Image (cartoon, rainbow, N blue to C red; front, side):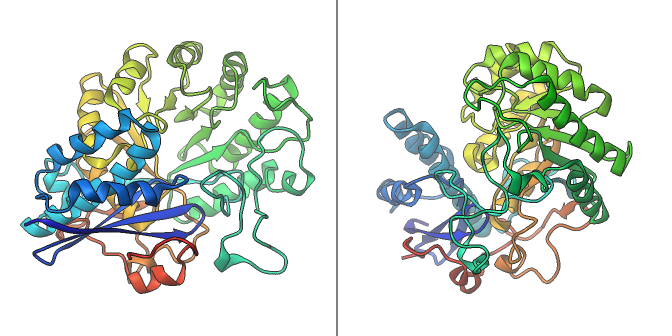
Length: 414
């Protein structure tokens, strides 16, 4: 069996969902999904020249060959491309040997995977471009919502009257009640959304008033759902060390399952300073791509929860990382903002991960999520996904549905 073709397609959802399609000379087709980024499909197209004619079952050798290129280009963008290719390879391998991907990863530890709902700032983020510019996807545009407007702005500091209603404590509580009614037992909310206070958005400092405003919103969630629902808070790397420590202290009475990305990711020592100053578990890792980085987060920063991204790290590498974390009794909560294809890749990884905590779902406002894979019912039921026993990923992208929501200007499996 040889790889005969590698193509891509992009859907304009809340994020760009970039699909990778690998075809073989035996007539097999595998699908994967890559984390979005500017110029991503061009990078994937370049990788085709290294893969055509190769045996897809030699996955470790092929991935190492691709990863060498990350030394000479932006590692992030290269690893995004490789992650999508890797999943498509595993889908092909599973179909060839009539095995689910979780079996290729060493077997499963659970029959259902716990999903946590990202509730954003009380209302799910409608859409952003690969350059993190707010947008309304084409399928959602109306006269009241043109292309460059979004339900929630990406500006995290300072007042914005149009969005303060969305990020008010009542909006947080309402979102929590809606998602728990759908069966989710773990919810995540953003701390770094609009406040009524004008602040300097560059120095990452939080005033006492801003800290109290953020804490009030999270406390409203706890009051709405009670002690049985787990709550996580995402900071998107927006604070300095001292502000992060003060925010963590203000939230300790909420009993968070984790405080995510409180400080910029490049300084692991700073992450450790925050973790050592609070009883709340600090979690990070979605911007890391290599096991050596995660080893430092465990050993140097003292983290007990890692949050790698499924598409950025890849499920083959992710399984290896999980073993590294398990040696140190560290849990893994997989970050995931993808379509049902990428989400199901995360499900297989989570099923095969002994120290798995939860897998993220960020697509509550995408109306065609289940339709993309021809699901007769919801893929996520009562906050869980059943682990499939069918070959490969267990889901197949419906290309006719995908074409309806395609991103104009991008190739569609050409």
